Amino acid sequence: MANRPDDNPDKFPALGRALMWVERPGGVEKIVYSLYVVCAGLFAADFLYHKHSYLAIEDFPGFYALYGFFMCAALVVCAKAMRLFLKRPEDFYAPKDVESEPFPEDQLERVDYDA
Image (tube, rainbow, N blue to C red; front, side, top):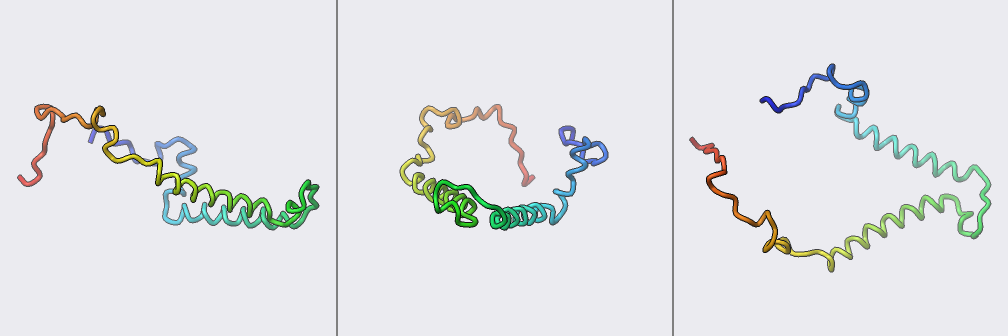
């Protein structure tokens, strides 16, 4: 295969070699658990300093973490609700779309896998 990229890690750039651990099994889980630890640490740090707030609700420990979480969840719910009246049928652009035009049969390179 002439178009296949070289899979030899020794030929990767330095940053590519340094990030190879992400490709190994368990690499993504390490990132996710690290984010959990960072979020928990930031939430715990909210209890350790004095806040100069304008509103009384801002003094509640973890207010901004909870506010951010619920607002993000609300965005997802609103996006799903908007999808009900904003979505279009699959063939909405089909009459004038280039993809809806038939491809010339003489230009197709069909492969018979049964032979």
